[in-house]
Amino acid sequence: MKRLTTLVIAGFIATASLAQDTPSEGDDPLFAAADMADLSEFRWKKRPVLVFADSEDDPAYIEQMELLAAREDELRERDVIVLTDTDPDARAPLRLQMRPRGFMLVLVGKDGGNKLRKPFPWDVREITRSIDKMPMRQREIREEKEAARTR
Image (cartoon, rainbow, N blue to C red; front, top):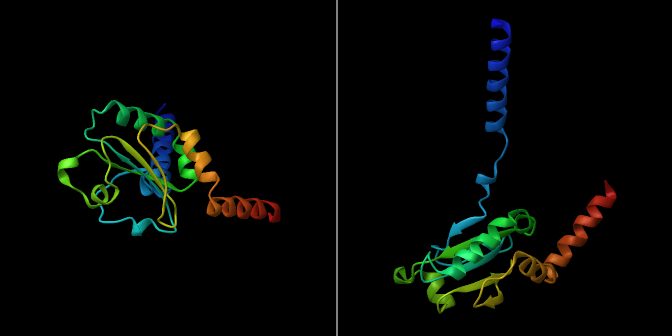
C-alpha cells in the first residue's frame, strides 16, 4: 500500500511540474482593460475588439461579454484581444478617441483602422465573419492552407 501511495504522489508531482512548463492561456490573455493611450502595441499582431459601456451593470455590456466568453477559441484563432472600458468618468484616451455614447462595440483591424462600430451587442459569429472578410485575414487563411499542404 505504501508503494502505491508513493507512486500516486510521484504522479501528482510530475503532472504539476509539467503543467508549470507548458504555456497557458494566461500568457496571452483574451480580455484586458482598455487603459492604454493607443492601440499601437497591437498593430500587426492583434485585432482589438473594444467594448465600451457606462457601467459594468449595463445589460448590453453583460450580454456582449457573455457572447464573447462563450466562444473564446474562435476569437483566439483570429488573433483577437477584447479591451473593455466601463468607466466614462476615468476619461481614458481610447474612450476619448472613440467617443462612445453608452454601449459601443468597435472592431479594429491589425492595421489599426476601425473596421466596425455597433451600438448593440454582436454575436461572435457575426464578428468572426466580419474578420474573415478582411484582406489580411484572407491572406492568413491562404497561408495556413499552403502550410498545411506542404507538411
